[in-house]
Length: 205
Length: 205
DNA sequence: TAGATTGTTAATCGATTAACAATC
DNA sequence: TAGATTGTTAATCGATTAACAATC
Image (tube, rainbow over all chains, first blue to last red):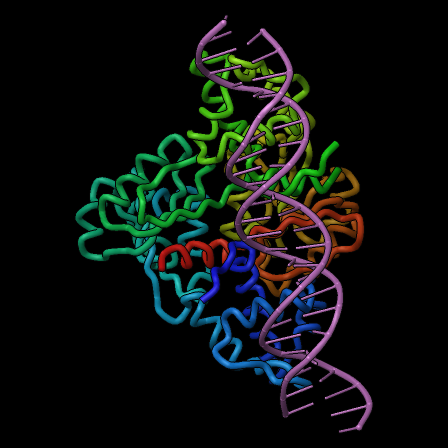
């Protein structure tokens, strides 16, 4: 199997979203050029992208079956087997992530939050529980989450990441605006708003 | 001047953050290899990156002056001249963005929020005002924000983006998980959590 | 002077785009 | 059959890495 680049990986959820829209409109077949026009990619790129994850070939003159594409994409993106996550740091951003409505659709289940402030602990309006950081190890023994979402202040991030990894987390999704280090074998993905803003600002000039 | 790639742009805020840390520790000079080790880049890449934005040359045997680097990066990234933004859709995520504590540091000032729900309107705890979407045009005539941060549900995003552009916004920072289209001359940057999650999930395998 | 670090030029690598044959 | 769309192979483009001369 060919290696799949990050750019490519970023595109797949956008394809999936579009295909679901088409499906709800009752459309069953789609060609690479139509997809490309809609999403702003070249048709060659669309073909390569879809070839890389499709279980069956497209049909010359007709295109690809949307139902099949959705199935393949959901399988490839892991939406079909649920992964669990905890949110570490339930401030404004952490709270938003803890209740982000689209994660369910992506197969990501937020099972708990952790914070050190007593006022934040307990059940949230949406029925999720925020535990004290002190209880992290014992709670993790029960829930065994796959992923830790880091939304603590930058100064706390590395410490909290270490704690999460020590307690069995295999992936770190870091929203704290700081560089963190993880050992071999642990997946790390950063969402850094300052980087995104830098791109926007540069385009504005 | 050479063109600067998006990857490169994403790295600059991370350099800046690191340099500020070093400065607060009283360090005045830094070499490309030390920077690379710390942030996980090659020293060649660091040199190219810094050359592209530096106003003065580095000093053989010594490295580069941190103070100068910070100044050059802040200038390049636009942190020195304040840009204003409005948040469209003050749900959990929008609320978090509206009060995100680091934006000030990046020279981004959130001047107002907009929502259509009456219960959300008025002053927030942190002293910012959420206006009704109905008043968008008239308020924008006063505040003339540069950027619109989009945090409405996906189904509303394109409509809201159009409204923002019609009222003079020059940049769209889109947090809604959907593909949107902007006319020529308008800057668009997407923060798509599903794309970021796709990368994390892939690394987890 | 010797050595560390710089800047520059060339080589490599990978992703995207282009060209084209295959097929329903 | 003709034409649209596919998959594959080659060309281009751009970013990263490597090599090396310049300099304090």
